[in-house]
Image (tube, rainbow, N blue to C red):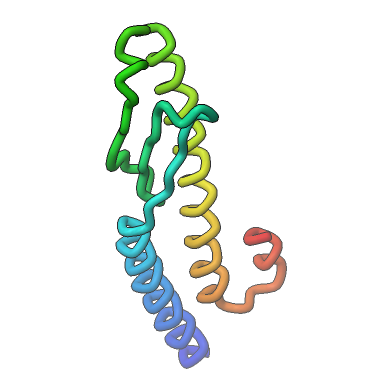
Length: 108
């Protein structure tokens, strides 16, 4: 019994290490999102940190349009980054979970 418990604890610690490694790697995964006319572009990490915003000079004349573009594009970028982040972390967590009946449905 203790062997099983120790084995599970070891596997959980290994999974925790892999999750941390994945989080660090996701800092280097960049996603780009832009407006349909490509006047504004946002680059964000998969950990949802905005890395760069490029704004075409023509948007500087229309504050309201620029604000709208920023809100829409940032929200799309954050959504995309969240999807990548959650998929990557769920894959690592599922891989490292001990085989406990009923738990497999949590990671589908």
